Length: 300
Image (tube, rainbow, N blue to C red; front, side):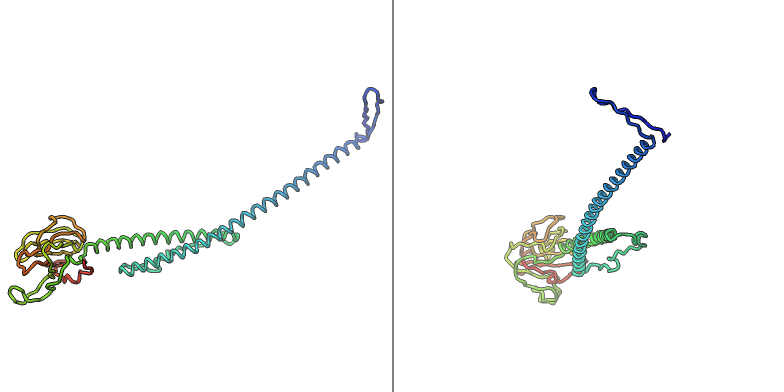
């Protein structure tokens, strides 16, 4: 079949002369095969060239993104270092507050919040960037746990200080009236009998009508006229504290009324057994009379 000839007749336009060309069949097939091989080779090399340049472009893009990520992780680690430093400052302030107000301390072991467990099996196969990301994630997780723990402890401190503030608000701590000390707490000679006897409070002398103020928050427990004390007022401050005010002129509060430190509750008078206008002031705690001078840290 390949030894046969194929004849082609070329017919030009109407004025030309037709021509006849004969070629061997094998030569024609060789040409077709050679052309096909050439086209396949061109397609293959063109594809390889495009793939090579596309791969290089993609690789360059990925390398740029990887560098950007590495820079971001580095900045994040600096931020983490600063956050750890701030956390350390907060811990030191919390410890200081606990020391000042005699609150229970937190041990260092408890603050560490240690966790255990084996490292991931793929850790050794990680790239530098992957390893940096893994370590950063672990630090963020640890800092979050520490922050939640510290927030819980600050809430405990806040509650303790709130309770302490409430207790301080209800603890007598200021002078109940302006004036002059005319008699102190303890044994003294009775001004009427001259005999030695125990004086359960302090006497503050001043003009009649001088305001008497509450030395702490509390509730009016009772008032009325009681023998030698004359007009007397009793305030229950809670936490075991009770204050009593004698020889009053006018009582300005009602039974059961809630009062705040500094509220005017009465005026100085000369009622009951008294040598002149003054306030008799007593402080009781848990049923025992106390020296009022120990509970006066501020004059008015």
